[in-house]
Structures are given as C-alpha cells and as structure tokens.
Length: 315
Image 1 (cartoon, rainbow, N blue to C red):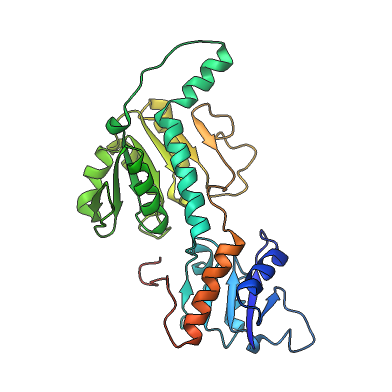
Image 2 (tube, rainbow, N blue to C red):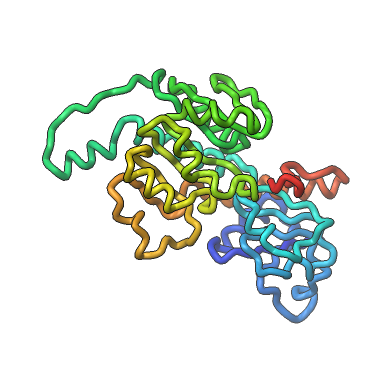
C-alpha cells in the first residue's frame, strides 16, 4: 500500500484526491492534519508528501518519506523550514497545465504593455480618441529572467509571435528564436536591451531583491517590468521611485512579499501598475497528479524522480 500526505490551505483536497486516484487507484491519500486512530494517523506509513506551505517541522515527523512534492512551481515555501529532512528528494512541480497557464499569462501581459493598453485605458477614461505610436513586434525587445521550464516556454512562444526575445540564466540555453545571455558576465548586456523585462527566476539568496534600483537603472529608459517569480524578487520602494522618475514606464505584478497585498499598498491605485492576486498560473490537479504519479512510479521502479531540486543551488 502506498500512502501520500496532502497538505494545502488553498487547494481542495477532494479534487486532488480524485485526480491522484484517477492516475493511481491504489494510492491512499491522507489529508493533513492526519487522523486517528491508526493506521490513518500512523506517520511512519506515509511514503510521499504533496504539500504547499506545510507547518515547520511536520515533514521531519514522517520517518519513511521517499519524496516531497511541491504543489506549486516554487519551492521556497519548503526550504524556509529549518527542519526539512535533508536526505529526502524535493521535487519541483513541472506539469503541462502549470506551464501552459504561465505562458498564457506572460504572453498576455507582454502584449498588453507592448501595445500600450494602459495608455489606451487612460484615454478611454478621459474620453480621448487618439492613435498612439506603434512599435513593430520585431523591434520590441523582451527579456526573460530565468529560462527554466516556465521561462523557457514563455520565451519560445513570444519569439513565435515575432518579438525580439532574449533570456538570461545561470548557464547558456538553446531555445529557438531566443538569444541567450548567461551568468554575471551576461547580465548587464541582457538588461540593456530589455524594453520589457519578465522575471521568472527561482527565489534564492542570489536573486532576492534583483528587481531593484540597480537593475532598473540598467534597463532602457521607459522599460516595463513584469514580475511573476516571487514577491521577494522586487524591492517595492525602488519600483515606485523608478516609476516616478520615468525610468520604468509601467509594471505588472502578480506576486508580492506580503500576500494578500495589504489594503494600504500604493500598488492598488497606481495608474501605471497592473495588479493580479498571484494567479499567473494555477496548478491543474489532473495534469499535476499525472506528473506526481509518474514520479512515484519511477521511485517504485528504483529510478530517480524527475525535476529534483538541487539543494546547493536552491532550485
């Protein structure tokens, strides 16, 4: 009997249980908090954990864990636990539904800024009928910070639309139609060409605060910023200052250091900022469960799971 612990305060356990059992009917799903009496409450019987923001120390109490699966693309919610088991593989959520959703959102927001829709919305409110200047897609330079599963797919799709797309990552990547910049040596040149900058980086100590005054100053004047990585990538005060000075023209923010976004945040009413409530991409239970079950089967065959986090790198 294979048992999996499910924990999330945001996702419906019944939908996930049904999706998991669809792909592995013999899987027993236990929902946190574990119940008594035994064996449902027997923590030693749990083989896998599929979780989002589990309470600190909980995973350490499951002595026979074979893998920890993140319910979302990010894994920083796990590595914030000082007692996270060090000998259990942590697996990132990589599934086609999550990837498709993020690409859809990024393409939508890039085109929104590219076609100056914030300006047209302002004209609509003012009752102004005026044709604004237009930039051909091949003259619009888009930069994607982070070329992992999500960033790479978004970059490729944007290139297919004819935009001039480049990406920056720790090591060089080969993506059709996308110029590759890598490492510290390539960052400044990458930023200098990025008229629309999209952040899809994992959150690490190296990337925390990367969307700040130093980065903004290296972008072309009047650039746009789209943050769909993590809220901690952005230095909020620096963005407001850059918007005030005109160095940054506009921004789309889907993630924030504090969520929900506080009611007194100036972002809510800022005319040059698009705010969405951390919905750029939502994990799809059916396709995500399929990916989780495939990794469980790999482990049961004695194979290594796919998309395991490199703890030294933090992603």
